[in-house]
Length: 120
Image (cartoon, rainbow, N blue to C red; front, side, top):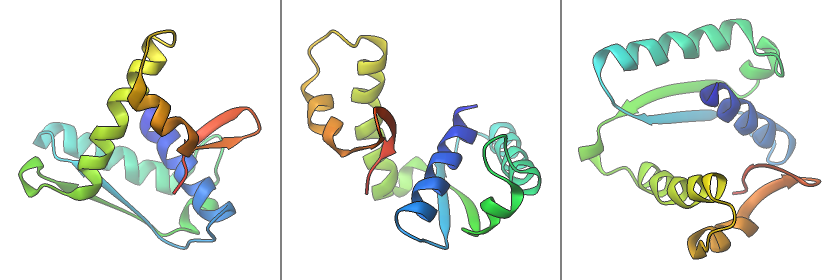
């Protein structure tokens, strides 16, 4: 569910705000079985679409999908790790002091009062 949500948000932001035509998804390698399941899910999503995006809308951004090992020290994966923890802490405990989230909050893309994803 979260994978679909992330792809939907990324495609919506890329097509509506940045008029982009490419989406490269990089995921940290977990294990052969898990990687195969996620790859199968990705291809199914691209071929069928989602409840929010049609197959054609997904293919407008020519999505690609790649796994990388943690040992490769990919900058984007490091940033994702840095962003994910404070955001998760905020979701789990919204009333706790979270200075890292306070720094990130203005960078989260909003559609009205709804947070859609990180703005680039």
